Picture 1 (cartoon, rainbow, N blue to C red):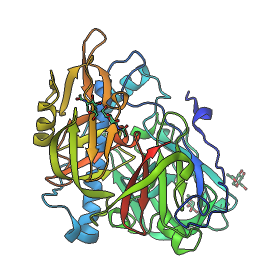
Picture 2 (picture 1 turned 180 degrees about the vertical axis):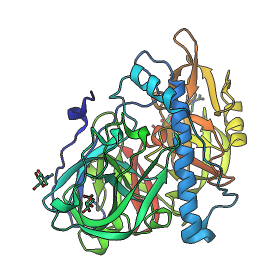
Picture 3 (picture 1 turned 60 degrees about the vertical axis):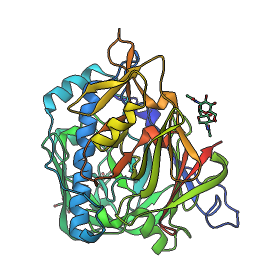
Length: 418
Ligand SMILES: *[C@@H]1O[C@H](CO)[C@@H](O)[C@H](O)[C@H]1NC(C)=O
Ligand SMILES: *[C@@H]1O[C@H](CO)[C@@H](O)[C@H](O)[C@H]1NC(C)=O
Ligand SMILES: *[C@@H]1O[C@H](CO)[C@@H](O)[C@H](O)[C@H]1NC(C)=O
Ligand SMILES: *[C@@H]1O[C@H](CO)[C@@H](O)[C@H](O)[C@H]1NC(C)=O
């Protein structure tokens, strides 16, 4: 059903040889793929899909906050609050998905291998969570049917660990299963004692999704397993010199680079900002600009490759759109705004250094209907519970820059794509 072959990216080992431990040379790259997000082929905003996406984002970060509360409650942002989970109707989702391009996935996916000999999986690399899970060979549910499944008995390096992994999704279903350690290889970089879960129960929300599982790349503090995520584990085992990774997210040429940054993908220097220590890739001192005018200042931002659009607290987002000529609320319940399609605002973010533009193509999610002259913006007002002054910047922002995530320096950096 899915054009899966097109999505399965091969792992390539990058050139070796640079002396700088944070630059290309010590790490490895993995190309990965993504098709667009919330706009249909005829340029219309996919409202229903956007709502489901928003609910999934809400629930993902709710789970992160629960883990953070359990692991290090002190480091929660001011005003952070664990909201009730939100749900959506699975039937609606299925009907909707059967009418849209099923290959139009929302994740950035690439292949990794687990076990000895290697078993391959198509994985979503998510900077907004911190666990690795894949379907288990013991999963008999229909959602697992089309997936690659982890077979522990076939791996000489697999060891079952105590405990159970469990996460709930917005459609009311749960993904859960036992915990293992095994050798995991991403872009040729190995972590031999990597904690992961092989889920025997897979949320139905993944049934029509081309990915097999997810590899979380945020801090251990928000991990369900409470174990080092892949990059940290690989560093502690000496497989990489730097616990640093770089991401380029684009329609073509997307790449995750582990162990440093891929200097061939950006020009100029990387502008770094210190993370707050909340467990997320969260940086402070942000401003938003609309048509060169500053609309919001002094807020925090979480940089999340697993979120499609951008979200801010409802009142902050209202102030933002007050500076967008001709804009108005499109969906008050879900915080979406519309603006005249013939004047997409020039949107940018700054953390006190350069201004990082969000292109018109990345800000515009499409027309509100096929005959409409209004388009929906990729910034929505939502209280996700992350904190009273915290915005979430997903792919709509990340597609405009080269992003660098450094556990070593506890910083997030941005550079201009070359
Ligand atoms: C599946 O079940 C078998 C038998 O209970 C068990 O040995 C194995 O560890 C389970 N999990 C996986 C991922 O194979
Ligand atoms: C796992 O082992 C079984 C039995 O030896 C074999 O038939 C199967 O092909 C193996 N699967 C993988 C993924 O290696
Ligand atoms: C924003 O400023 C740039 C140069 O500083 C200019 O080219 C552009 O037209 C300005 N945009 C608006 C909407 O004023
Ligand atoms: C950002 O957008 C403004 C306004 O369109 C433009 O003047 C400026 O050159 C852009 N900056 C970069 C780095 O592309």
